[in-house]
Each structure stands twice: as structure tokens, then as C-alpha cells.
Image (tube, rainbow, N blue to C red):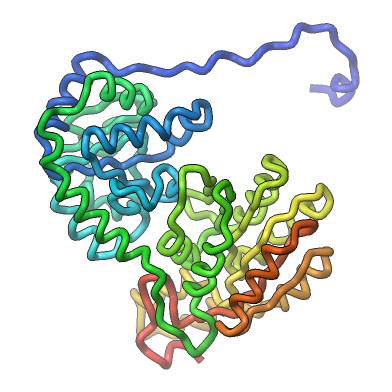
Length: 402
């Protein structure tokens, strides 16, 4: 189109927003789902992105999901990058179904006799690299509920595919009523929840090459508001966020589901602009901060004031971990190391507050100072351990790191 056409005035009628369309389940499919759930003694209910989309448009979704969990005695498992879909302290929380679920939890989950993917597309991350459920033929009955018929059955062969709104399914199940013997699942739900609570415990081992990022995340968690927005960039450092922060349904979590680096800071700026006056916290790795952390300039320009927690371990941690695990005898570490700036000083150059945390002794005061600042962005430069490569794994060969 010619550029000058956008300078012309028009009296064309504004096109109003379309009503949101939601597809309901077929009666026969719903009846079969009720039968499968009534029979199951050890079901898993994986809740994902389509249910989150429903919740954005209807604030009754979470209450209905909670009722379903309680009345039907079902464990609810939020999936990769969707931890806010179910309160982590709810007794029916059955564990986070993210990337690389810890052996203790995934081992128990594999005793399940039914998986219901409720608004979850299913991907390599959620399925633990297509092993649970196995693709294309799952090793246990699978119900796949997703609003796009093109997705249902595309990778997995579900025993029951329902191309419809997951919220419409929840409402229909609540109207139908739970089976009389739903209580038979209580021990299963309690067992999963006990493992989840154990993994959520604020416990970590000190590290000598920098602060264990677990300690930082646990300290930040003490300051998170009930309506906080939390963003993370991609990287192993994010595993600490998912392990140690018990998200609530009143909070918002934003991250790249596919693991692309650089989104954490722009998401935080957008959240601060979209939800002015609320708390916004961004967790970034040093690599991601160097990619898109300069969006702090946008924050300053428009009065957005997120708190940036930067994990500086001097390397691309995820790449280093995979290289170390797969090719332990090769000289790869030089290719993963970073030469970083003083991020606190860098933050001050934009007009933000800059705070540095070098050891656990500085942790409590440093994080408290960060959350006390309300009138400008805050950069918290955390000198963290590279030996503690993720929330679940450490390097064991000392020669790998200097």
C-alpha cells in the first residue's frame, strides 16, 4: 500500500470486536470421559495453555478447576511454563509437569492409569521427550482435550480426542457430578502432593564458586505479592524458579514455552505497563540479559519499574550442561563462557537502581533493598554458581570448571 494512504482521513465505520467463540464437547464424548474418569484409580490431569487462554477471558475458570479437583478427587498437574494454573499449596496439586521432571515425581506419575491433557497441546517438554505419554502410541489411556481439531491426534493417538474448549468440559463435568466412589483416589492424590511439597522445600547446598541461585530465588519468594507478575528468560537458572516458588492462581507467570532466549526483560516491561502499580519481577540469566536486557531503556522511558534478578555464572549454563553430560571428555567449556559487565553498574547507566549480591551474607539485605524501590527499575546482579548447573544437577568433575 502507498505510505501516504495512512495519512488520509476516513469515515469508515469501526469494526467492533467479534464475540469469543467456544466449542462445547459432544454428548457422547463427554459420557465416555465420565466413564473413563470414574474407572480410573490413578489419573493425572495435565492443565495447559488453552485453559489459561480461557481464564484470561473468564475469571471463573480457576474456581471451576478447583471445584473439579476437589469434588472429583483429581490431582492437577500444571504443565511447562504454566505454573500459575493451580495453587502450589492446594492439596490436589499433583506436581509440576515441566521439562525433565525429577525422578522421584515422574517415577510415581508413571504409575498412572489415565492421562487427561486438559487444554494442553502436549509437546516434547511436557511428554518428557515423547516418553510419557509415549508417542505415537501412549502406554496408558490418553484423553486429549484441545480447542483445535488439527492438533488432536496429530502426534499421539488418544483413546479419546475432544476438539473443544477445556473450560466447557470442566463445566460439563461439574454439572454431571462426581462418581460416588471418587474418594478411592484420595491416597493417590495425597501421595503425589507429598512428593511435590518435598521438592518445593526451601533447601539447598552452599556452593563455593558463587551463590547457589536456589538461595536467591527462595529469598525473592518471601517478597512476592499475591498478584505479582513473574517472568523468566530461557535457561537452566529458570529451573530454580519452578522448583522453589509455589505459584498462586492470583499471580501471573510469563516465559517462552519453546525456550527462546531474550524474552524475559521485554515481557517484564510489557507486564509493568499493562498492570501499572503491581509488582513485576524478571529472572534473567547473564546470556539473556546481554541479548535483550537493554529493554530497560524502554522501562525508563515509559515509567515501568520491574525488578530484574540476573544470575551471572559467567557462562551459557544450559549449553554447558548438555555438552558436559553428553560429551564429558571434550574441551567445550571455553565456547560456553561469557565475559560479563558489572550488571549493577550497567543498570545504573540507564537510571535504574543497581544492587550486587556476591555471597549469601549479602542476600537478605540486597533483596529487601530491591523490593523497597518503587520509583524506578532495579537490577540485582547476583554472582552465582556455575557448579550448580540447575536446580537438580551439579557438575561432579572439578576439572570442568576453573
